[in-house]
Amino acid sequence: MDSIQQDITLTLRYSVHFTTGALLPSNGLLRSVIAGPAPARPSDVVFVVDAGVAAAHPALLGAIGHYGRHHGDALRLAAPVLVIPGGETVKDGTHYVDAVHQLIHDAALCRHSYVVAVGGGAVLDVVGYAAATAHRGIRLVRMPTTVLAQDDSGVGVKNGVNAFGKKNYFGTFAAPFAVINDLGFLTTLLHRDWLGGVSEAIKAALIRDAGFFSFIERHAAALVARDAATMAEVVRRSAALHLAHIAGGGDPFELGSSRPLDFGHWAAHKLEQLSDHRIRHGEAVAIGIALDGTYAHLSGSLPERDWRRILDLELALHLPVYEPELDEHLEESEHARSVLRGLSEFREHLGGELTIMLLSRIGRPFEVHQIDTEVMIRSIGVLKHVQASRSTRSAESMLATPLARGL
Ligand SMILES: NC(=O)c1ccc[n+]([C@@H]2O[C@H](COP(=O)([O-])OP(=O)(O)OC[C@H]3O[C@@H](n4cnc5c(N)ncnc54)[C@H](O)[C@@H]3O)[C@@H](O)[C@H]2O)c1
Ligand SMILES: [Zn+2]
Image (cartoon, rainbow, N blue to C red; front, side, top):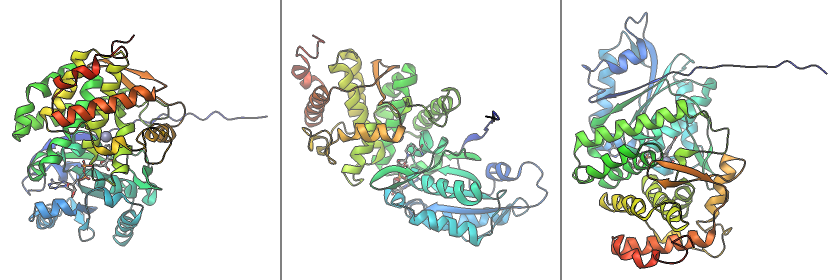
């Protein structure tokens, strides 16, 4: 027998920039990202834009053309801008992945060319998957346009589309060439998307940074009032936490079974599917956080004060903590329409042993490998009550049981 041991060490490096007016000719950031300080010749670039963003920013498509002409020594628009629908339906199978591949082919892009994706997390996931699989990887510049995409999904190394009724069933791990977070895009978001994206910041804070959680608590009213400077701070700190986790967490491509920054996501992914995506990802994450937080409390690990702070913050931000899909087929945990089935689907997606992150305090996570479905069902009952009364106080009687006291 003979073997050759193969070791490959790879350093991936990309920058996440924060700016406003990224597509104004006077803003040289995109130009320098693509071409550096002294371009020898223009690089080929194609743009894919989220239709919701194009509708909310009617001057955008013209601005892209103008940017290309103004910086013609550094970049060449190799095809007309491709506009694809925004929202989860764009991730439904590979239809729009094919459309982006077609664009890349028609523009005769090579692996030194650039695809610039402008849009919400769903469009970025589609374009990222297409860019990663054409020529085995074309340079991708992401310009996220939602809070969620700027504070989480757009800054990381994952992409994907849904298939067989499962979230992100097709996808790759692929680092972007660069990310440009233009805060100006956020002004046109629907209020539910403006606030929905904050749930990923709360998630990161709960897992990694109790001080950041307090910051969001102190500024909840400003966030509801759409204060741009406060949101800029939330987005930046959340993005930094996600980036630090990817770079320093020891498992950037999620080869193990542990995914700390997927706290609350087993239920979130299932709720998105059960509601046919009526519940948006950010909203589903808010419910997932509330659910696992309540479970952690009822099973005796998270003190009531911390439990209350988590739910009170979500209520203050007008985030949901319950939707009726949580109640379907609860007694049959493997029923396709039971939220509890989300546990086994989550395990399948990650591989290996079921690993769920819980909290012992705000900022202090720990892992469990088993979930007591009785306690989970009771947690859903508590959340139903909290949502109906929009208060954690009134749920007190439901907590004061032997189980809740860990007896
Ligand atoms: N790849 C990852 O690591 C990762 C991480 C978290 C979430 N995600 C994915 O991200 C997706 C959710 O992304 P999202 O929350 O950004 O929502 P989204 O992409 O579904 O967009 C929501 C809606 O907002 C519109 N929109 C986008 N930007 C706008 C703007 N500036 N003004 C007005 N309208 C705008 C879109 O057209 C769409 O209709 C989910 O598919 C989720 O699975 C991916
Ligand atoms: Zn998420």
